[in-house]
Length: 287
Ligand SMILES: Cc1cc2nc3c(=O)[nH]c(=O)nc-3n(C[C@H](O)[C@H](O)[C@H](O)COP(=O)(O)OP(=O)(O)OC[C@H]3O[C@@H](n4cnc5c(N)ncnc54)[C@H](O)[C@@H]3O)c2cc1C
Ligand code: FES
Image 1 (cartoon, helix red, strand yellow):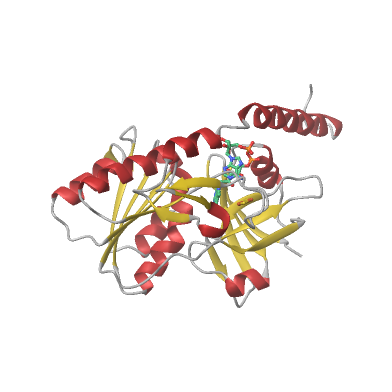
Image 2: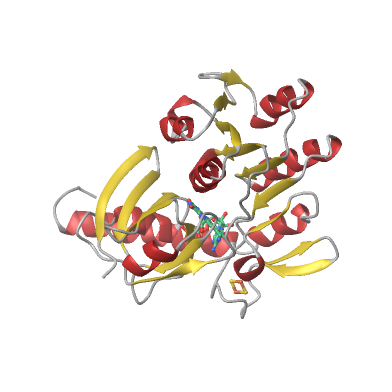
């Protein structure tokens, strides 16, 4: 069950795994995610289903190692099993032929925007993609994004590859050229999604963002993923993860994302210590 069948490293700390999960592979749609638990002591974390193969019964997950669970997941090897995977969760992306759609991915956000770009292209849209990273080495999925886009624009913060600047610089240039764009989809760090939404508001361009709030149960019961969208309180796990970017209260989201930073750091430090102890036990390192 849930065996890891393939594992690749896309960039420093970013891993790409293919996992056996036939039921989810058959049902999942663009924009949906899973919640997994590595072992019986593990916390539950949400990850987007980047791709699936219903015939082989596999799903593809791409994740950045940022804390204890993502590091522990990254330490698993081909042949290892993940204890449980729940999904597909969340509402699928609303896909139709809008005309021209801009898909924006920043950092690890390129992974969750990829299935949306695929679905938008399949629905007959002209897809312009903008992907960005801090530097060239951190850029992921350029070839795959290129293969599903009519035009791909790459930006790096330090100018080591593509356009020197942020994804918003490239987007502004597109919008100033008067390109007749019907929809913008943006996924990445919250500050990036806020910056994109502030920009597109000026151009009256409908914008969808996918929120990465902290989640626990993923079923609308715990309230952990609560966000404010316009005048409404919404749960990212069941009402989202996609929302109107112009209505999201990003300041509240940033505050809520940082609520457990102290505990997350302690947990990661302990994990690294145990990992070093284990390697020392096996005689692989000297401490
Ligand atoms: C719907 C959804 C889809 C996601 N898809 C992806 C994906 O495809 N690839 C990917 O790399 N990441 C994705 N994330 C974020 C991923 O879930 C977190 O990085 C992960 O939970 C961190 O767990 P950790 O134990 O490694 O780190 P922690 O020690 O728990 O936290 C490290 C950092 O991650 C943030 N974080 C912690 N828990 C969560 C959580 N449950 N959800 C979101 N952020 C959290 C914290 O604010 C902190 O800054 C997604 C999040 C959501 C809500
Ligand atoms: S994760 Fe518990 S309500 Fe959404």
